[in-house]
Image (tube, rainbow, N blue to C red; front, side, top):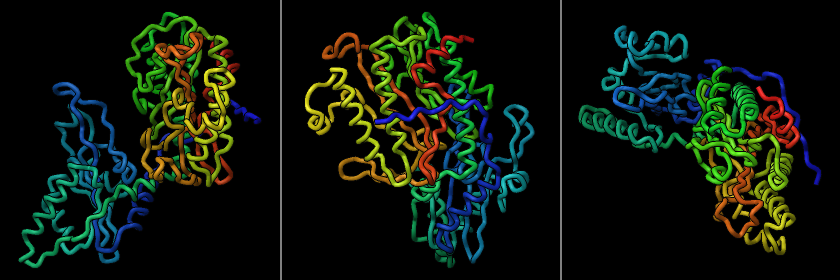
Length: 456
């Protein structure tokens, strides 16, 4: 089979944030799904205490952010569709000079309407008075059932309204889970969302390049992690999208290794799974390369097998294909390759039936990507636990085959032990086929070795 080789981009693409009009468009899409005489509630995240009176860096609830672009804690979005009118209403923290001196500026209610395009904005203290009024005489309430705090609050408001039915008030009878609706919206990215994701992939690719050039025998994993964070931040992606995995040697065989505390050794590989976050959107890139800048023969053989598998899978991507079909391609390619390397033995057909390569390829081939690293969206899992949703233009997903050969697997020839390899790119489904967002992050043997010979 012919392997498609990708070229490394050197141009800065994309935009750094969505225009506010896009968030209004997202709300309009949700309004179109709402029944007349209904209301929807979406809550912001709260701050989380890290230690005593300090908090973790704030991370907004992604559904709330998708609909608002508003990045303060403890807010509430209300979408009210009644009497042929649609209103988006924000409840948020008030302007407070004393608080803002200590903790930073707040948007306030006036700017919420002017800048974020809400129809009305109130302080949070107005919730108890206004929400029962909104709920009265409506038919349906939309909210995310998996948001326990929001669910409890809605039932409290409904109880308050129910206590007034003798005065002629009417309680909504139908509760609708809003999550599947939002999930499907978020699964298909707009042109501006894709532009932001191109940008964060480009930034993350620069970070992986820097990590390769800064890696050396005797450094610690965490020192390379700081190089990634430096490169993310200096280009505007001020936070990683997830805890970076910087795994030298046998640590690469721990899938979610994040200790990043061990020393990098000669003749071992370094697996880095890291991506930046830009305006809420994530990159998720994995590269594996030799600590000393030169692949050993066993490392190169396994690495080339994983790379050729990934390139073959990516080349098959187009609208209408599914993860089921891509997994079949990956498993066949990996299984045949492991036979060729004498790691597996037997009949190819039987080995595929036995899923023999899963001993070494121990995770899924990919997942949706967007505002969350493992983004929302139904995979349409069938009775065999296969992902059978057909790809359509605008979806973004990862493709990440890997092989894991732990030191304590004594069934393996010694030359393979301690090698863990994963290669992960971020792919957009287009009308014609696909676009690889991750093309400025080197991944061929020649590209990696050439870059690592030019230290910075």
